[in-house]
Length: 66
Image (cartoon, rainbow, N blue to C red; front, side, top):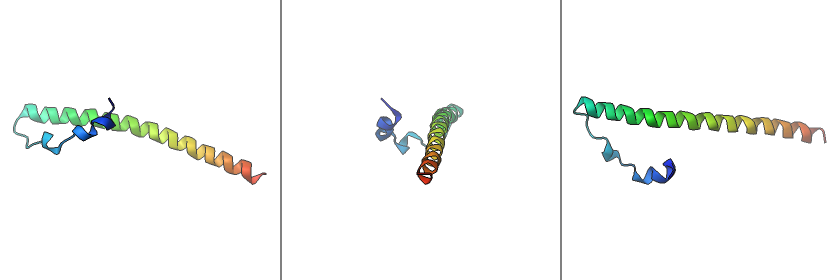
């Protein structure tokens, strides 16, 4: 199952007031895991966006010369 499918399982109640070092570390670990996934998705999206920009420029140059 993907992260999107699991989104409905997310609950803000998962994160209550921090009362211990162990709980603090779990929060940090969760954040780090999510942050890394976000960074990877962001990198992929940037690459796709760059490709579309290049394709658009190529298309403009081809249609301008027609």
